Amino acid sequence: MAILNANYIASRLQDAFPVLYTGRDGRVAHECILDIRPLKEETGISELDIAKRLIDYGFHAPTMSFPVAGTLMVEPTESESKVETGSLYRRDAGYPRRNRPG
View 1 (tube, rainbow, N blue to C red):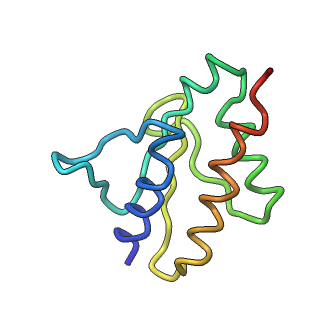
View 2 (spheres, one colour):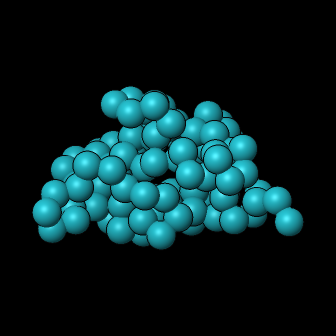
């Protein structure tokens, strides 16, 4: 179930953030690593900013800058429901768009 949840998150966020370390079929393992560096270059919003905002919404902050600097590693557990996983997508994916300059 953790693999399914990680792939659901990766597929929902791939248009907002590049997903690193995917297999040949574009899938991830039990975690997905979101590359925040392009967003930071464009807007100044960092992985720390996103992690803090997720905490504001009651989510456990993802691992920051590991294994790659400037990334967030999201590791959903087997017990995460699709509703909870979808809630993360709705919060996280909207953050960059709401906070972009201009």
